Image (cartoon, rainbow, N blue to C red):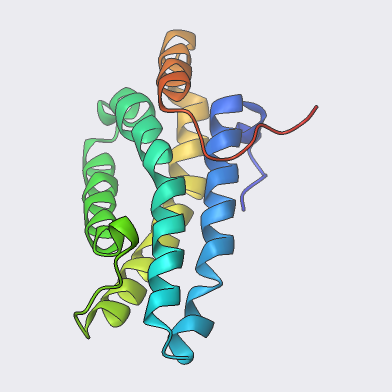
Length: 158
C-alpha cells in the first residue's frame, strides 16, 4: 500500500493501513474458496473481514470522515455509501451462517471488488489529504475514537 506521503507516520493512519493490509490478505482467500465451490469457506472469510472492518469503519466514520467532510463532502459521502454496500453483503454471513442465496458468492465478490477500490481511494486519497488538512485537535478526536473502537489487530511492537 501507499508509503509515499508520510501519512503512515501518524499512528491513526498506520493502524488504518494495517487493517487495510489485513483485509487485503483475507481477500486473497476468497477466490480459491469460490473456485472450489466452498460457500461456507467464503462465509468464514467474510466474517473475518467484517471483524477487522468493524472498528476500522468506526474510526473512519466517527473520527476521520467528519473532520474531512467539510472540505470533501462528495467524496466522503461516496465512501460511506460504499461502507454500507460492503457491510450489507458481509452481514449475510454473520453469526456463523452460510448464506443459502445462490447469488451470494457472486454478490460477495462484487462487494469485495468495491472494497479493493475503496481501500485504494482511502490509501491514495483520503489518508494523504487528511495529513494535509487535519488539525492537531482533529487528529486527537480520531485517536479518541480509535481508543473507544479498539482494533482486532495487535499493536506493533516497537
